Length: 289
Image 1 (cartoon, rainbow, N blue to C red):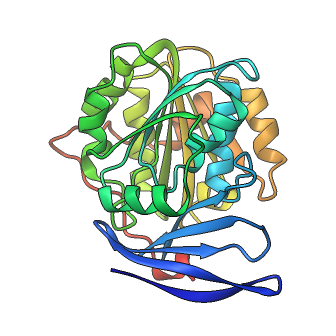
Image 2: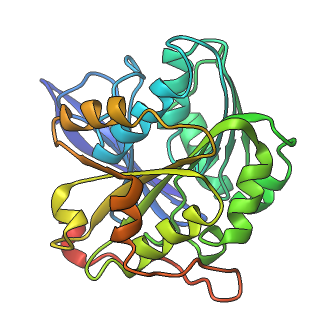
C-alpha cells in the first residue's frame, strides 16, 4: 500500500510517492530543482535519480562515472548491447537509450514490486529497446547468450550491501561468458576503511580480466571515508586516459587508478570464491544523512 507526501517544486506542491516493495520501503521524491526529476530511495538509502525530461542527465556521482563507461564502450552514438544487473529506476538504461539510440538492453532487477512502481510512476520511453526481467542478478545473467554484451554493469544492493554471490570469481566467469571478447564489465562497489572489500574485489577482477581501472574519490581511495568506487575491467585495452580526463572534470572530481598502481593498492588481497564470499560492508549511518 503506497502513500504520498507533499514537497514544493516551484510554486506547486508535488506529491512524493511512498510504497512498500519487496526490498523495503521505496520513496520517489521529486527534485525541487528539475521539472520532472525524481530520486528513488529504499529504506532511506538513495538508489537512483531520474530526469524524465532529460534522461542523459546523471545526478549521482557514481552514476556519472558509469555514464563515462557507457560513453566510451564504443564510438559515439553507436548502438550497443548492455546488461544491467540491478535496475533501480533504470537510470543508466535510460541514459544509454538516450545517448546511443537503437541500443538493445536487458535490465535484471530482483525486486518485482520496485519494477512495477518504477514502470507506473516513471515510465520508460516505449521506443527504447529496454527489456526488464524480475530475477536474481546472477540467475538473470545466466540467461544472457554467450558473447552477447558489449557492456555488463553491476549495480546491485540489498539492504545497502552487494550480495555475496555477486562478488566472486565464479560470478565473473559468468560475466565474461556473456561479454563479447572486447566487452567491458563495470561494477559499482561501496566500501570504507580499511577497504578490505574493495581490495578483494580488485584482486578478484584481476584474476579474470587482463585490464583494470578504478574510479573513485581520492578520500575513498585513501581510506578516509566510506563511499562508492567504480571498477572497470576488460580483456581489451581500456580508455584510461579519457576516463581519467572525464572523472577529473566531474562536479565531484574522481581519481583513476590502473596498472601496477592498482595491483599495488590491493595489498596482497586474494581473489574471492563462492565458498568464501561475503556481502559488502554495512554503510555507516552517517552516509545517508
